[in-house]
Image (cartoon, rainbow, N blue to C red; front, side, top):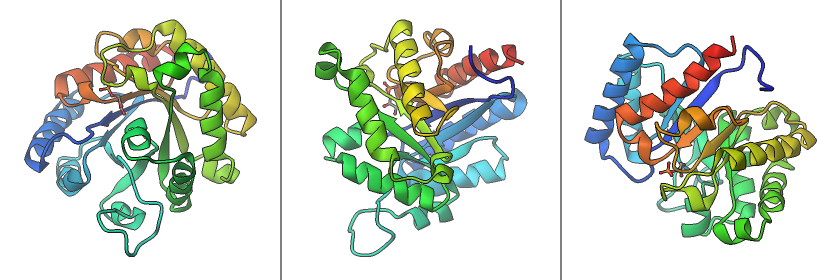
Amino acid sequence: MERMSDARGLVVGNWKMNLDFVEAVHLIQQIGVVLRHQPVGHTDVVVAPPFVDLRSVSSVLEADRVPVTMAAQHVNAYDAGAHTGEISLAQLTRLGVTQVIVGHSERRTLYAMSDDVVRATLLTVVRGGLRAILCVGEDLEVRNAMEHDAFVAGQLRHALEPLTPVQRSLVTIAYEPRWAIGTGRSATSDEVRAISAHVRLVATELGMEGAPLLYGGSVSPENAAELIGQGVNGFLVGGASLKADSFLAIVRAVDDCYAELR
Ligand code: 13P
């Protein structure tokens, strides 16, 4: 494995449009109790609750000193103003959000988020000094045509080219093939290994050698231990992040892998 011994794992739970603020508090308290009593030493844990849950979740993180940080699932590219229904980076920062997911495939496909809007949003996040989790990934048609490498490279270059080297250092890349999201059909180990190598090549061309790389798409406690050995630094987890048990089992699998590298 090419990782350095001081490298850390990363697991991000994307709660999507699930859990009201009462349910969110319950889940983060459960996660907090376990992580405080059995801390993970080599893995950063992040949750991305819906906007309306952020304030409640941050209160629990602070009050219970839970070793978890908060990401937002999306942000508007503009700073402020007449954008009814949207949320700005300044508003998220004020709530204690330190990372933002940018260009999730559900935003791209269901809400027409174009490559240009992804790029503008990414720039807004890193200009504001927050970390961005840039999502890329192909649909089944592209995968079946064996064009996924070129497709993903195109998404990465388009989003990352305008950024300065310092801004690029704030980016985590998340490869999430659309056909694996919420389907129960994760990419295979071979597929994850191959695309990881490819993404790292493109990242290196962009001066982002060693950028954190996540895999997302039907990650579960059953496949996490195997997938973490395939060149990624961790996972972006959807469905399995909604229950403390399954989320923490994935965190533990990543942490065990990093502990072994010491
Ligand atoms: P699932 O883990 O439910 O497939 O979702 C993955 C995802 O989209 C995380 O952002």
